[in-house]
Amino acid sequence: AQKITQTQPGMFVQEKEAVTLDCTYDTSDPSYGLFWYKQPSSGEMIFLIYQGSYDQQNATEGRYSLNFQKARKSANLVISASQLGDSAMYFCAFFTSGTYKYIFGTGTRLKVLA
Amino acid sequence: DADVTQTPRNRITKTGKRIMLECSQTKGHDRMYWYRQDPGLGLRLIYYSFDVKDINKGEISDGYSVSRQAQAKFSLSLESAIPNQTALYFCATSDLERGTKGETQYFGPGTRLLVL
Image (cartoon, rainbow over all chains, first blue to last red; front, side, top):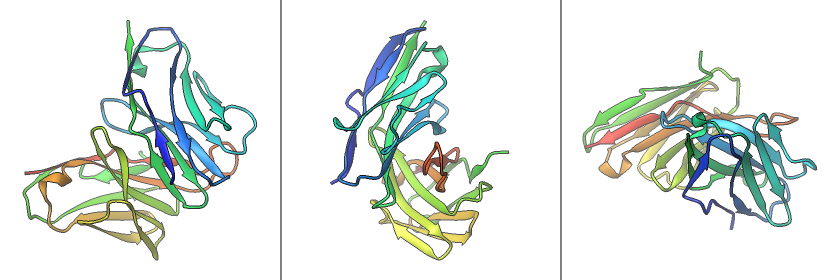
């Protein structure tokens, strides 16, 4: 069975510090993609970063990086130099070529403290 | 202009009423999806469509139906709304982007539905 797990329902981080949001997944499909989305209080889902299962390097997008550990089946999001505007819900998701479906985690609510 | 739009953005309806949520996209993507979001449950897939003639049920399709009127339009209907369908509904699109983003999904702004 395919599933994705975010074990941190909520986290706090001090402004300007780095924070890691955890995500683990389980699939037997060798070809898959991992995604992180941000959902601010306004409700929209904002795409942050993508990592393909065959990518050799960890993905980075500005202050976001994805710590991809394939053997451990983890895809943690690292946000560097946190800003107040980073306070939001963060969802990890993955997509497999075999099923053509996306599966979302239950999310982690991040609060950045001034 | 937004690439993926949803109408209405907010809707209050009564139990038993039929309601339609509409989604339009200008991204030129073939694949479109409907999700619902409930607190603590993340996003759950209701229906998805890979092209105009291809409609598939997701994990929670009971009580819902969809119509893919064109490549750019995908509507979700609640035939007889019930209170536990109160949720935030998202439309999303995707297409294979060779390179750095794989098959990234792009979401509409969401529709907040309250069924009384």
